[in-house]
Image (cartoon, rainbow, N blue to C red; front, side, top):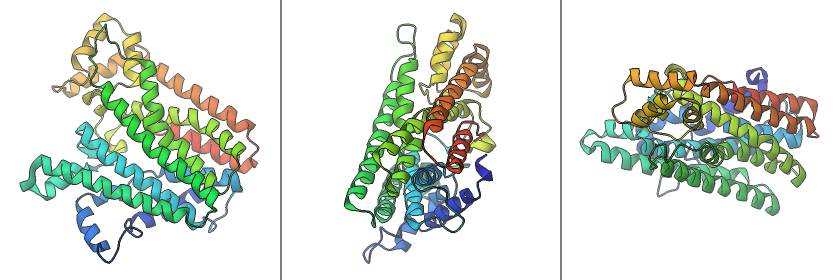
Length: 361
């Protein structure tokens, strides 16, 4: 498993050290670290948590091009890239939690709740507004660490890495819009949830920015050729889909103590997930009536969420999602088997893929 790879701890600690100085490359005489720390203080705890999967994906891309690394060999530019990816993810999560009216993230109050609590006279509108601005600040910090990561690359390699990075940002925005607009559609027999639409959201909103592009960026920083980039994309694409299918499963069935957010959140917010689409297909009319009445309804209670979970499980939809995850993991493994990588690199890539799909949080 992933934790058996000794350098994973080094990647996490190196990236976390950088996240303790998020404004290192975006401050100035006119805008100091102290000022930005003061702005950030209500929600800064969010930066101290997280599994660092995107930074680890970048490491996996790097070793795919360079071969295995040894303790003490992790380059600064790779850790700068990891910090950039983690800052960008936190920025996206801050904005996502405002959109979804989420109250918890990583076991802490969501950013808008943290700001509202720190400035109680401002109320919810202030909390949302301040969190939007903090998300923008994190976005700037992500770009500053990315600029540092590519600063020693050739013009050609820096340009290629930059294209990956800005494409990732655009895809997240587009995927978020797909997710948001899907929730506006009526849930009815005439407008049933679409498995294809759910998979399109997964592709753009999460799979590519969580797994595919971080892995490609790590390889690009090490100067990987086009052939290896293409092979890595083939490996990472089904893996990214499996990762998000697991994430959606945890959003419904996960243990709040492990996931850091309330169980059933995706049901409350009315997410048009693959779980919903498959449950709709596989349950009976009574089950569909219940889903129509309560999926995304404002009056949800724990017993109602339990009933919806029972529909997803009892219809066979949860098992079908598990099978779909395993199919995508197998597709990823097929690409990995064909890649001309060092055996130890392949072992680490396989462990990375397994950890993404079989995680409990």
